[in-house]
Amino acid sequence: ARPDLEDFTLMRSMAERFTADWNRWGMDGVYSFPEDMLQESQRRMARHRLLGFNLMRSNPKRCGFNLTGMLDHVMTGEGVWRFWRDWKPGAMDAMQDGWWPLRWCLFVQPEHGSAGRPIRIEGVLANDDALQPGEYPAQFRICGPSGIAWDRQTVARIPRPAPGHDGPLAVPVLNEEVALSGPPGTYELVATLEQGGAPKGRSWQFYLSDAASLPRLNRTVTAWGIEQKAQAWLREHGVTCERFGGSKPSRREIILVGDLSKTGANGNAWKELAQRMARGSAVVFLSPLAFQRKKDKVAWLPLAKKGRCYKFGDWLYHKECVAKEHPIFDGLQGKGILDWYYYGPMIPHHLFDGQETPDEIVAAAFAAGYSTPGGYASGILLGSYRFGAGRFWVNTFPALENLDAHPAADRIILNLIDYASRFVKTPIAALPSNFDEQLKAIGYSQ
Image 1 (tube, rainbow, N blue to C red):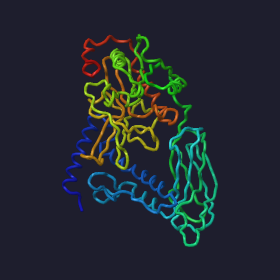
Image 2: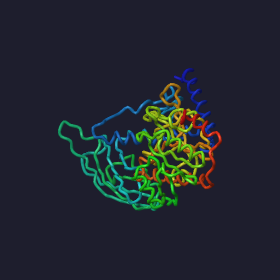
Image 3: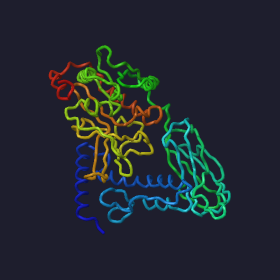
Image 4: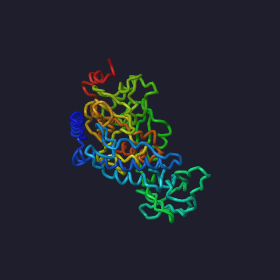
């Protein structure tokens, strides 16, 4: 059956809203056309499917699972077929691989690690009556930018089941920690069975970064709500932190603001922050929770039109995070849909929505075909607003939470500081003549 008129009406409305946001936020140049982002999202689905197969088929007691709809019913985009019963790119290969009677289920944790730090690699052989009980020589290799970075030979043991019982649907073959000292780049864990069968699912891609390649900044910043552990890490990378709330500055500052929701920050402190911004300081809000006052999550957002900041429900139905080419993403995978496997826990799950369009947008999120009324959602992930002679950045990337634990967190924080430094080179400015009215407009004074 073809999609009915109601489906088409909903899809048309969703497409119009998506295109309007794409154009309004200046995303042209990330992809040639807005629809190319949607097609790229479909191409990425195949790897997500394979991860699902790895997770399910590595369990020795699971014989099947619901892989969601076969086609994109209504408008949710969850199928391996599109509305017209044609396969999405890569989906047929992923399905054949996933249901193959004999296949490797490979895992690397973290999927983006640091050179010299341990990563855990695991190989499980899913066996649906393809191999008879016995021992089968197996070999694993990790290949990277400089060739073979690691090699291990082992044995896959298929046990003989007890009389009247079935054997396990999967057997563990490899599970160990490895520290790779190779150059940064894309790596691949590859498995082979040297005799007995030809499994699919033989490879899994992951990434390594080199902490030694992080830029060392010669900067002084002002810190508000930044934990001492994070300040110590910044100091190791050339960033000296001064306490917010001290003496009045005689220069424009870079001010880093963390999660203030539990600190009880009062109105006087926020007025002081606004005054420094208006005189030319650059404020980087490193947490979307910074603006919360009681139950209002955006009460302290220094905008007259505050909109909302909310946690988006990513699961089967999810958004795509899209970044522009920008200095904040220097040294990182950027420009386009952010790779879940590269960014991992750094993928944002909060959105700013309903505010005026930022003066500069660096990254935004789009959920086309989302399972909510209207089938669409969108929001800002990272962007900046002018404020008097200064500016501020709203940000939902959880970099503070992942500092020194995920390479993307380390780099994005240093990039944010370095980029903000471009805006504080001139002398401090006088307060705008209408500053009191501006405080009232943003809700900082009665």
